[in-house]
Length: 130
Image (cartoon, rainbow, N blue to C red; front, side):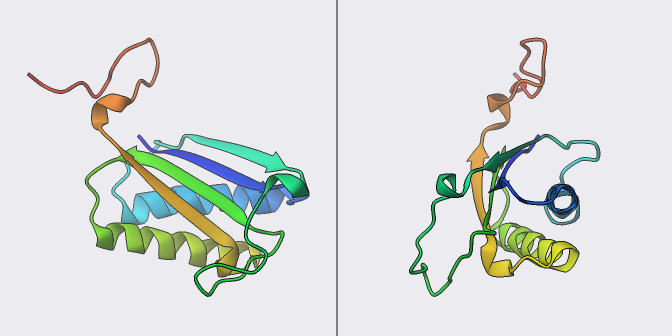
């Protein structure tokens, strides 16, 4: 049920984008109890002026033009510990697979209700049970 939106710089190599995609999905499987084959992602490449971040840094972190924005929309109910494990798995996995700095892996989670999804046919596959 998750939808991952991944935003990278236009010049990010294809193999780096593929690795980021794979790491995000694997982290969902390993830490967040996402079912197999539930891989829905939208990946966008952006010109340098379209990825905006504070040049002076934020919360003690500094960023580079290699920043990767990841936004995951998924069902509400995961614990803080699960979310922390997910953040760590993604940042560490992307760093290990691509060499990108962990500081440049920016993640936002959006929790929604199960009935907020339609996977096709105009149906609410996760409709509340009466």
